[in-house]
Amino acid sequence: MAIDGVKIIDSDDGHDIYNAIVERYKDGVSVDTIISEILSEEQNFCTDEFYTEIYWTAVAYSLWKIGHLSADIKQKALDIIAQGPHEFWLEIDDKALKQRQKVLDKLATQLQSENPKPLKVRKSKTKREPHFKVGDVLAVKFEKNYGAIFVSEVDQSPRKIEYHLACTRLLQEETPTMEQFLNSKIVCRKDNTNFGIDTDCWFNHKDLGLLLDHLEVIGSVELYPCKLWKLAPAGTLEDIYEEITDNPRIGKLRLIDTYELVKEVIEK
Image (cartoon, rainbow, N blue to C red; front, side, top):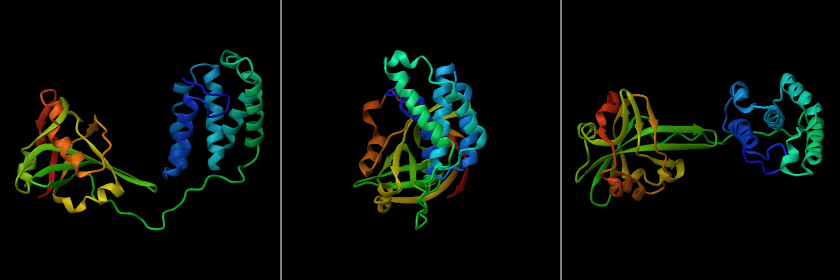
């Protein structure tokens, strides 16, 4: 684990804990869920006394930051702070122990009173609706031909909407039908009934919105559970075309029939 300094969040674990609490709180995840999940990770973080200090101080600080520090977590952190900084801080720098003590003293003071300015989650004035839903099958119109893709995942929170588009290898002159989509090939890892989709175009809401004139819903399907084996940021129509053709990887790809991923055709 990298440690950049003596502050509460100056370590890889500290950053991970802060993000798991504060950033997810910003995304609208409930506080009860956040606390339950971060406490379930205690054994993974607290592998010795040094990392236990890192864990509980980061958890308490992050919850104090959002204004939801419970009494039991506060007391656990204060008990650890009372023990003083772990001697391992001396391995980082000969002045680190005293510097860490000042950080812990400040944190103890903070924890014993409520945050006067807890983090507030800004509510969007207008609720955005996703362009598409999971399982939508889309025809993609390029300059000279058409492709067929489907929405494998939609990640929606108060701050963002993101889409994962899985691209089949179909490319033809006319708008594809659902039958042609189902009979196409797709890059996918398959282990018995477990699927790992190895093709992806990852769009944010704004960028995908600019391509709506090129996208047409031709049907929808219910998919078998699939993992996204590949995550590829995208923002243009060319990104989709390159994923469909993907010439550099030809010969190294595992192709299956697209219909194998489909549990049920919902709409044709």
